[in-house]
Length: 356
Ligand SMILES: *[C@@H]1O[C@H](CO)[C@@H](O)[C@H](O)[C@H]1NC(C)=O
Ligand SMILES: *[C@@H]1O[C@H](CO)[C@@H](O)[C@H](O)[C@H]1NC(C)=O
Ligand SMILES: *[C@@H]1O[C@H](CO)[C@@H](O)[C@H](O)[C@H]1NC(C)=O
Ligand SMILES: *[C@@H]1O[C@H](CO)[C@@H](O)[C@H](O)[C@H]1NC(C)=O
Image (cartoon, rainbow, N blue to C red; front, side, top):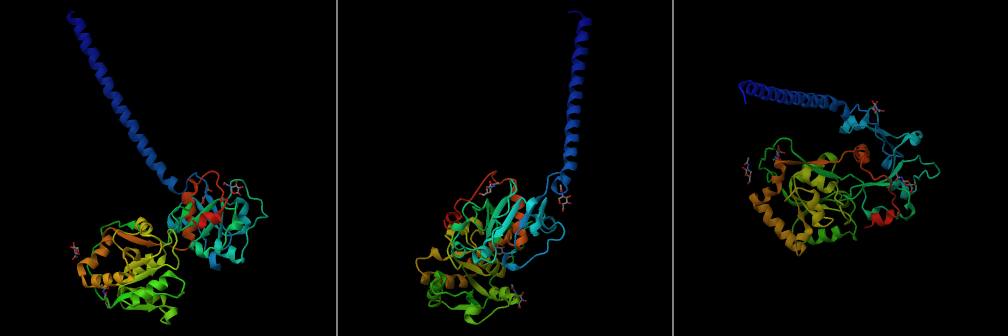
């Protein structure tokens, strides 16, 4: 090899190197430009996007109480985009989902508009927050509904009475949960029925430990303003459901007990249903004890042990409870699920679904 070709080779290698460097720089530029482009595109996607709006029509308001639908309700109140909530029946032809609340249907004060031709792709939704024992006989609703809206975790649209959210910033755990407690156990009850399991548990418990009972049954009515302050003065609150059914955990736990700052003693679905949704070590389940007397003795011991009692509030360090809002929140939630709903689904036996 002569010197000249050696020189040429060096020059050749040099130019390949610079070419490669240029390529890398160019590729990086493209990547950067793409990422910027995506960033600017992201903003309209969340709200003013090209995605079409989903229209949810509430055929009649549950329990007859109407709510304002002014403005872009789902976005303004719950930051749920592309969701149009309406209550004018004239909008039936353009509705993607028409929602029927069960209570009025079984009471006969409202009926399904079965005479109307359903536009292709329109879904009818069955909505209920009651336990199966209070939903009535649903046999007549076979092959009508395409989706369910319920507190049940296996519903198409899950609308629990309350849920657990992470705290954005770490909460200050002030160990004052034992302060101002004047009663061991409290209970608020209006619907007191001999056949309820909770009535039997209450009777056995009150034979062991003192239970302060409020509500219309005991003629010690509490105004809504007095409810939480009253509960906050109790070590334990009986969050007893009126019926025992899968996932049926109501505001008695989420609002009365957790917001009131008393440790909930729960009676309802099995412990595993509570564990799936409630904070760790935040409640005491009646089933954990061989007898109600044992439960009573345990509560007495716990109230005297400040350290053990406070451990029931440790979850508040990084979690908080959100109690469900009004019906509009549930209806807007349908939009969140809309794109993942099955293409075709019919509840051929709603009664069987509800009662299992
Ligand atoms: C969706 O609804 C919002 C609020 O009503 C409206 O501003 C927007 O133009 C609608 N988008 C489409 C694609 O219809
Ligand atoms: C509260 O109690 C917990 C556990 O007993 C302890 O780790 C924490 O430091 C206490 N916080 C305060 C503010 O006393
Ligand atoms: C205890 O009660 C007093 C008087 O009602 C109130 O000011 C205080 O905030 C209460 N403390 C706690 C920890 O709830
Ligand atoms: C909804 O249910 C009706 C009545 O059974 C049925 O004809 C229709 O195909 C279903 N629609 C969807 C989207 O599943």
